[in-house]
Image (cartoon, rainbow, N blue to C red; front, side, top):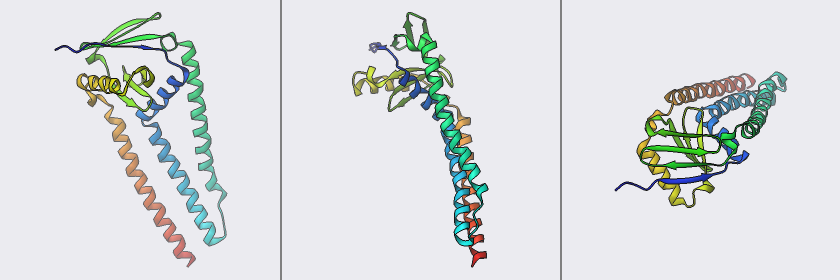
Length: 206
């Protein structure tokens, strides 16, 4: 028996688009980069602090990297907020109401600004977040379906199951995963180096 199409009428807000940008940064591994460099920066600060405690001499140069990291994070989120506002109010395909029809063939998207239909094999991937569902048409572009437009938890599950059934989720960019594993490996080496360095410093003090 053929499943009934799912029709969703959506009106996005600037917050919806901002949430998408944050989720997209996560998919692209940018948050992993932040964790990696953040931990590295503050490990350097910890080394300097421990050294200062036991030697009475603090290197203010150790503050440079943590300060740069903090400024970078604040600037990144400010720029992301600025970008979400700019794109939302200048792109009619985002700010205007639209309708998504999901059926066995694929997706149909209709609005006053555009009309297009994509078959399942033309879609890239999808992701279920705490804010709703993102259906990726490319590695960086997605149809945004906020949770409030999915009437019930059952409907979220229905849409998710339909996407799982038809989309090849192995299309997720494997290079992102590989880069994340490499970063974790480097981070482990850095942590071991820090522990060894602190051990050497404390040994000399003693």
